[in-house]
Length: 343
Image 1 (spheres, rainbow, N blue to C red):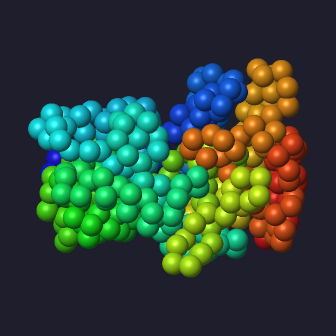
Image 2 (image 1 turned 90 degrees about the horizontal axis):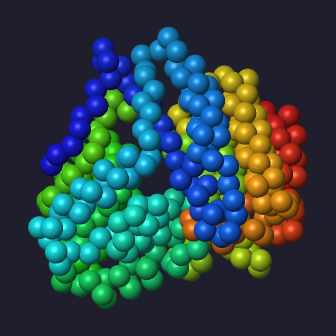
Image 3 (image 1 turned 180 degrees about the horizontal axis):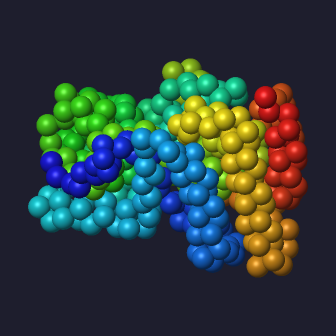
């Protein structure tokens, strides 16, 4: 076991924010859309950082900022080092952005929610087959062989342990795990069940919470928690007739911002942060329309990898509130107006 232990100064606890917005927006480039340059996105994330830091001002917590690019490079390079010693091993991950860099096989796992935002359980990621079918396919190919699991991090370790258990039951040898961030609860849980090599880049001793920045911005690839449904014994994302999927980003009027993001904010502060994130997203899409010389519509986004889901505001009783031909900016403006309806 090895990695960097991050101790908050003077015993402070740590709120970790990984800056992922630009890297996820780059998924739009792969479907032919031009996006703002990194400096413009850095400015948006800078505003988010300021608001989150203000939340913890005067408290016994500090905000730790991690750049996703360097973070991802550290994970992949550590895996490559293990591959030198285990040349026959196959890389497996549940994180698409790492899979693109490291190669190997991506198993699409996600914690799905119902239409009201309540967590159901671990299910398949949007655009992926059922968890059972994915693991069964991988297991048939890798039975009796060694694998290296790569993850961006594990907060409680429940999803990671679920995958290890499922692979082990099918005679797949999990020889090593490499992760960006290993949190105390996950470390303790893994110690009970995993005896292979464990490598981590950061270990935070007193974490408050951990958030990637893209989860605060609607209509960004992989933003928020995806809405799912149980079909038989499988839990899968809701896919509509037009192939689109539905999600709840962490901000209002979509998700449970205070609960999901671990921010000790008043209702007014939650509202102000949500207003900032929606208006920033509108500006990003306005800039995209300028760069692409045309409106950017829902149908332009749904084929990204990772998947871009349509955000659903609380109070929506029907899903026919949009069509693939609707401008993203129009839907965001409607949701911004709905902020006044949030209790």
